[in-house]
Image (cartoon, rainbow, N blue to C red; front, side, top):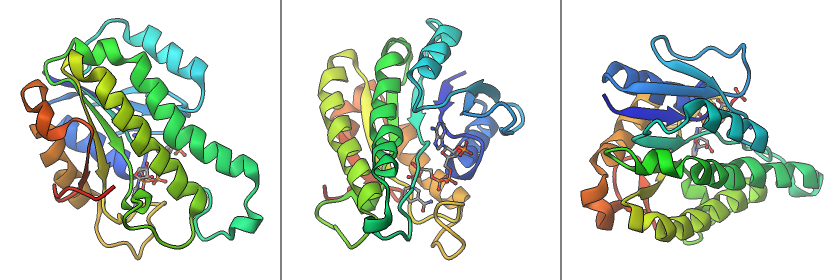
Length: 225
Ligand code: NDP
């Protein structure tokens, strides 16, 4: 039975990912930062505040050497959604970088041996088209810049992990109806998740050249940097 660890699995896209993999027979570690937060039935709840290095270390201690086939860095924040940059405190911009960029890389570093010990050896990172330099738009500078930084960090990481057979994949989930995406968004979580899964589930040690360090839309098409 393959194993996946998903961050931010208590709501939105992360919750739908956990539900989908659990239904497909995977062992699912559903990570959420607060003890009271509910995760999909049948999954294994674990505590993780991705922005807290002690929390990352505690999770590693809990997992030990257990192989993790897919580490899915999904948790994210959009603190400047609809906000004027002039009114955005520096703390919110820095927190965006911490949660959206620094945290996924730190978690990946901490769990690299677990992923390398698995059959599939995939690290997925939920990014966004809004981070694409080729498609830049107005506003949301803190969010966009934190995810653009994530993309660069993952590209660098993809070189480091390549010798260990690991594929690092960046994904745009679509504009999805969640607390973050809002009611007016284009697609529901199930459509987003089934699309992204087609890409992630095809990746593996034999397909590194096609997946490692690449950026995909939820429909599987490549996205311009
Ligand atoms: P939601 O706001 O619905 O959910 C965000 C999730 O991230 C929650 O589970 C939240 O946990 C978790 N999270 C935030 N900060 C932390 C933290 N410090 N530690 C642990 N968990 C944390 O967002 P979505 O489901 O829509 O987004 C998921 C990912 O997809 C994000 O990375 C987002 O940037 C990306 N994305 C979403 C799009 C959309 O249209 N929805 C479009 C493009 C990208 P808690 O409940 O504790 O706050």
